[in-house]
Image 1: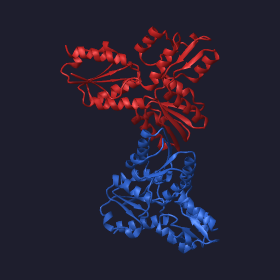
Image 2 (image 1 turned 135 degrees about the horizontal axis):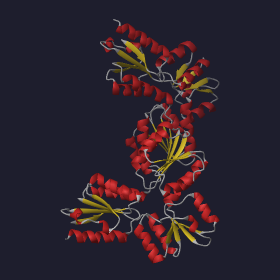
Image 3 (image 1 turned 90 degrees about the vertical axis):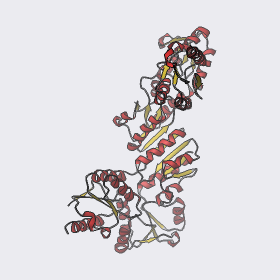
Image 4 (image 1 turned 60 degrees about the vertical axis):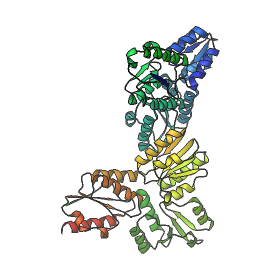
Length: 277
Length: 277
């Protein structure tokens, strides 16, 4: 069996940057998981003593809090600063961007519409920067129920699919005088999505590696399934099942934007073993 | 045979306004046709001595030039003012709006994209207000060939269909950081289009009245044809053919935004005659 990696996969610029920041701040703690990857978080804890706290009250004056790639709400950032916690910001610049847009556009009188998952930390953070009306929609179906003014500014969660974002904007255009659309979907997501689409079309079996709660990995898996019914979303080599590879000729591999290369390499080694059995 | 008028049809606010302005300025001339309706233009000439000149050089100091509903290029307006022509502006406010947007957005550094027909007077006018890069596209297919910067502002010809405008914006979103969309399609066009769609679904024969070179009438005819194959675009009662109504039960009537009521009434009277033969 041939194993082929997607042309683009795995860690994006923002994740690489955040890990570097965390490694440079040993003996600190991240406020919430730095990235959506439990294995990498364990590695940072073991190798650099970068802990993880979900409770903001655990950060005391003089301690270092590393802000996760997804960002945190503005109010929580203010609280950490007020408490004289040493804040090290590892928010992905592609997430800082929609936060800034939200703040600027709502200050300019636009109602803000965010395309994303209201429960996702990135969106909680972005939303907190709006100073006026702000609405979160998870699909085009939800647009009709919005009661917005006639000028709206729109941003998207960085990991969303452009097709759905286009659909949302199309709906908004029909009912608003001005729709100011910011394409905040990040290129890394585009690149990984394009590559998985291409590879899944020729592969017999696809392995998509990433955290089970990682939005962008789930998107890759969804795209992969459209072209290759034997697509599996796994977190590590331990999730692999030997029968997946039985009789297959080409195994495609992709990985979410939070998946480190060492996990991908472990998966590839294991697949080689399994397919040679 | 029953004759039913669409719930919304005919003259829009901008056209009614322009005719009123022309009637208040007898013994003047319009620069280019005031509206796309030869019959109404003839009436203004006969009843109010409002002439029509296609040549800007015919307007001399002290004479009155009525600016057509579609607007004129900024440079021509300046020329008339320089020559001390008395300029009376009958440009539809819904056309003035995209002109202003074009001017403001290009001053703010946006590349301007106009969805419309480059040869149409409205678009010639709107385009002339851009101070930087400006591109006119007539369909979504033309978007891929544009070489724009990453921030674009988009306006549409007032008479365009929202579905095509949505398609253009969808394309732009994929390749631009910011797409600032102004919905400059006018509500009158929406209303007349919605009404013709509704009526054509139940009518056996549809009569769509308006100038042969009127974009919005052509749009109404296209929509009508989608639902009622026996749809006819006519300019006046003289274009009616008796056989269109043979064996029909419901005749629907719509009219373009430049079609006056007196023409519509003449058409209805003639259809009544023809269907009672």
